[in-house]
Length: 390
Image (cartoon, rainbow, N blue to C red; front, side):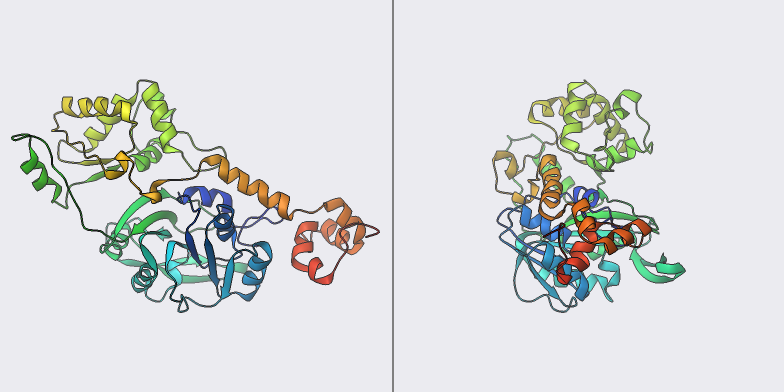
């Protein structure tokens, strides 16, 4: 079976759902590198988003040949990971490929060397559920009953590998048949010096807050991750709140801003915030969660009523800053990409099979998945007719 999903072939990677899980920024005008690009599905997405330059790397000549056929506006090279070149990129993708690197941490550093100072590295990694800071040998099923053993990091190991960078856990990725581990998505950026501005009046708590913010042991509660835990029953809530934890139909992808607005409009935001406070166990905590501006005072009030001293840190982007990495495409754009692939590459199946009886027989026998598959992988090179009498 092929790896990437396309309209003309069923792959094992569930590519559309994975694309949603990656939470990629808007790529228009950006330089994009996909390391381990396979047949180029995500390169095609970048081109569809009007990225200024898209390059994919894979070691398989067949994958690269197919990727060039599907997405001629992108650049592809059949090479190993030692050939990243000298070009800098705004977005680098490394999806379910890190475990192939002989030295995973060193490879992350090499990728970050090719990342623009304001860019983002998107990592999809299989992660071992353990508190140990280590790599764990994991047996992976291969074809025809074969298997191999690869090293996968624990969450603590991921944190230590990324310690010299700024990174955010984006949530779980799509599970594939035979996966020995859960896949997870991380966005990684270069650290920049901080300008933390405490601009309130005397005796407002500036010194205490500044001291607290410098303590690395303060736990962080990620709203998006908490939504997934609520949906999966990992955290107890009211049925009314849990009912808002909805996935995009047929996927494990959530649209957190929509969920948050629905919670707030239903009057359930105080319950959610009290849940966050209770998870903190009466100790300092940081909540990383988008809250619409009109509800932020309400959130602050709930935290204050729960016994917390509230610090509302307003980032530059709140004032119209230029952080393009936080801007994501609307869901409709993802659907439009799938429709684009169908329009661009699907052929008239009945006409093709009528023009090529041997292919029709192969499809009927189950030896060929479809007429479109045969056309793109064999028929185009063989100069097969697309319809009778052509």
